[in-house]
Length: 124
Length: 111
Image (cartoon, rainbow over all chains, first blue to last red):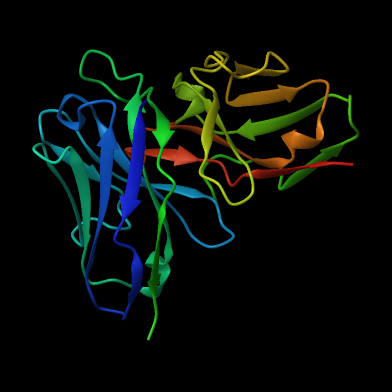
């Protein structure tokens, strides 16, 4: 069964750092494209970052320069390192597998499956 | 303000048909990028309902259907059931932002 399990969320002060994890089972993360999507309390969904099978990465403008996505192939786990956190980064963070990438292009992609999410709260 | 515009809420009685619109622009839906739909039940993670405009993953009832035309897309739900009460999101790619974007979400209430 394909499954994603996030962990590592919690309360952090503004300006602080936190790393959240996404452990995958049923498939190999290094052979797939993996994304992080977040949802602020009571709000909609926002794509945050992607790591491609070749290891290259991409970020939303709102987190570029502050967040870093990575993976550990031996643990079949994807990470999101979040630095210089702001109140507006408070959200449930979901990891998801990208689907529908073709010929090196992922512009048509969708996200499936999703993990259950891990809550990050940035507050003093 | 989301790049893709959805109505905040829709409602319908059991057995009725409802539609949820998703309006974009020439840099996303109008540029030919696929539209996907997600269902988020209360307190749970989103789940893909329709992918690539009109395709249903296995296990999704055929009461759910999607379409796309021009700069807009629609999700239709027929034979409404109480279990359909959820938030629904559309998603596409925006070439101006170089990012995957979502609609603001639509809350479906089954009366």
